[in-house]
Image (tube, rainbow, N blue to C red; front, side):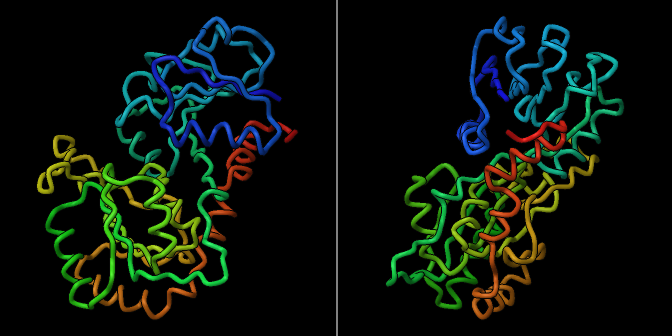
Length: 306
């Protein structure tokens, strides 16, 4: 069994790239990556992933299963249209990463040329795990993860934390080092998530993998995202619904999720009194580990695991 990653038009998101390599390694699948489109015509592999480039499947050996995406676009274009680019839907799929992204894509394209699938990439559960030394204690009440939400919401959340005299540290998307983040979530009783929509949400899943429960003020549509703290990034797309979520991979064992900011104070009280009852790492191991994510792909295409 061999998987080939095509790097045409750009590298995958770094987390996706790392995950593909790990997923192959733990599943005993040979792995190769290439920029040479002619390499794709050779018959010595089984699965092709092309994160950015739509390749004519007719040039690919007929036994090869092809996973396009997930980085073609924010909103789908003609590359998913059966009228513009007909492909063989029995061996070509487009990876949306999660169900809500799949539904948004379906809002834009009426006649799809290939199935939309949800193949999340694996979380590095070995790197992101709780501290194990015997004197380990979580010394902060709360880590706060902020990404493209309104200034009004962020200010309200910080005021609530201050009013309760909780200790917290802030991690703003694009402004922290990963090792600092990893240490911060390991040392926090819970993480308050003020995040816009996430197609997968690696940072949140990595916190969960550290067995840190989340209190999520959930984004319910893509209109909750703001780049300037005030205006919706995707306002031009109204009246489309663009229903979304900050945590596409979630269950009640992972923490508490609310959509109404006025409920934040009581949700924090609930979290502080019941945080030890949540088991987010178990959810990640069961749903998003490297082994599970690769098995999801193999099962879809009815490959027998090596």
